[in-house]
Image (tube, rainbow over all chains, first blue to last red; front, top):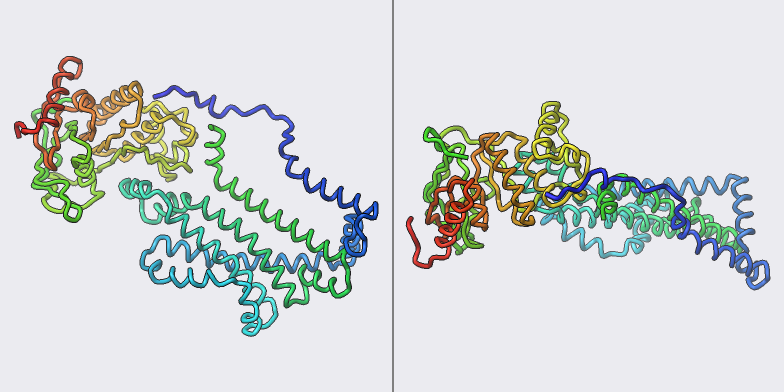
Length: 270
Length: 240
């Protein structure tokens, strides 16, 4: 038994300014700076590619009119509802097929066949079936996020070390305890990876759905701006999508840190 | 640990056999384990020692034979070769399985103290050494106050010094808790040093039984270890 001190293992590092945290923002700042410089010097024509300042001013004007907040809110609503519905179905199916051989044999082949269909190709079918209202857009997002969540949940559960399950069984844990204390925590890293991927799919699907058939949302704002050759708004919409994408990724990342704190202890030890 | 003359059988195995498809792993195993006894099962790799232990633990079903307990079925706990700690739980949570029971929490404190890890209660397994992980596994096995402790080569991956310390700790704990213990090991010296009785599993059955030596006499341990080794590799067989 090695005499490793527990104190040494958890000694906190001295706090100091971590410049590495700023590093990921260097490139975006340089791009925006270069973009502004190119616009100011006339290298980029303002009519075809407006400057960052012009885009920002357009954003402020839209916000003052209330249009920006309204469209962002409706897009967020569609994204969240789609994620909740599709993610819940994907998670439930993944858990069911992960723990039940009967269910897996019955449904997995069919789900895998459906998965290979590009979900955006379903847009005409969805519009014809349920119109262009909110249910259509939410359905498309749901279908988009369902499969990554399903695949990762199933894979996560199937990859849990069977020796740990055997240990739990031999130590008298109930089936529920084996699921909540061994299988689910063991599968969680993979499930969260699937969620992170699903968030990307969620925004992509929403952009397309709002561009094709909508009268509100960020996608609609971009399509509408296209009709009026309003380049500032089009670029503003792209920037908003990028920021929302980054925000959702940040939420998923923090969720990982929160749920998988034990992995940080491992990394700190290494 | 010494087997007293008044000891009662805890477990009786009659004509036990196990096969996977056409492959026979164990056949005609007949054994009686006395209460409080420390028995070692030794033999060549793939000889069926671990399979026998898994059958006793109820982790697998036997193909033939019977396994009976003269009294009520004992509480059995297994300590595996790999520690099988849950990496997402702290040391304390690993031994209580996150059950919020006051008596369980109190016992966990006692067990952690017994294996010398009370200061490590809130650490994760990744922050422990190999020997410390096995001590947590031992504490976890002791939590349910088992009557029968099954050790499936739990010290196989440890260095010599840590291994020796773990052997002493297991012997001490088994004596204090008056446990009946079955140890599977490929290390004949470990068997001779720890066990009251060593059983050689050869050709899928229990062929020989050795009495344990005087554990305080290294020479006696060596003699018995040599005899066990001879029995394992002797192609002509030996006393049944």
